[in-house]
Image 1 (cartoon, rainbow, N blue to C red):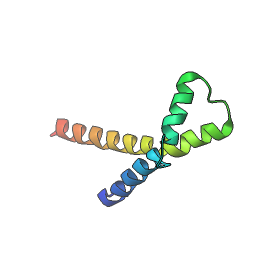
Image 2: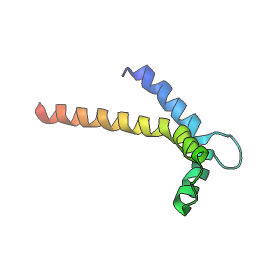
Image 3: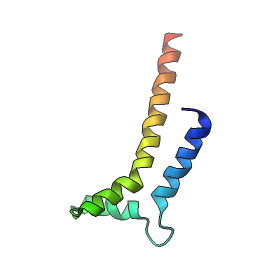
Image 4: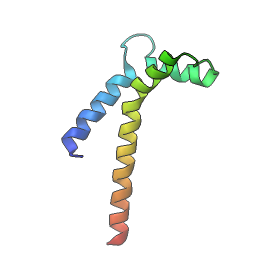
Length: 76
């Protein structure tokens, strides 16, 4: 993935993580519901995936890039 595409994905992930811009972002609300065991509705699970999915994707991509760089450094 090109660096400019990753930049757009990072911006999207951060915006989705903090939406709506108000008292408490949906991602934080859903994580609290998950922690307390109250995440039962399918819409709540969809909301958690919609707001947290891009952030998880960015973390996976950055981890994969880091592992690739470490392997290349170890092989050299």
